[in-house]
Length: 148
Image 1 (cartoon, one colour):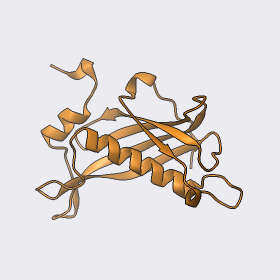
Image 2 (cartoon, one colour):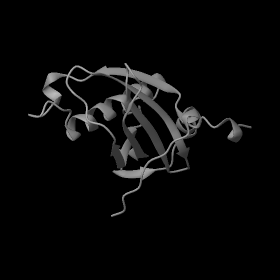
Image 3 (cartoon, one colour):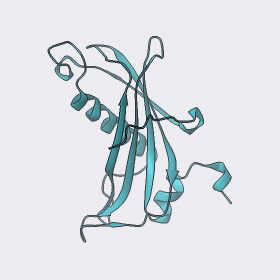
Image 4 (spheres, one colour):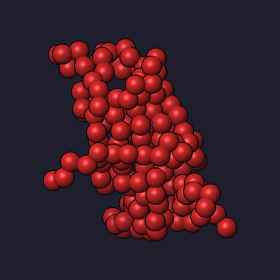
């Protein structure tokens, strides 16, 4: 397995949300656990998709699911710290996309973590990955150079 550092262009981030680390999300050393950080990343993803009008599962039983997560933890976080999650779509193709998430401390903007989530559109009725429908792709494809 390779150890790749994540690097994102700050222009990719188009959404921000803030969350405070709860006491139940820390370990005995008083730091945020990897499991809790992963859950906070999932919440940031859900808030981003909601802001774009994308439902968890649509009327056709299609939804976006994460099938790969790369996480680089830069700094440990204590309980009650307020974190800023910046989210954007790094790239998107017909069948998959990469979501970039940067986590920083609100008070000094120091980097906490970076994550890349590969996502696909899933058909829950046929239990398989399908191509993005045009509406979802158009909403998520934020690269102005690709617009006609």
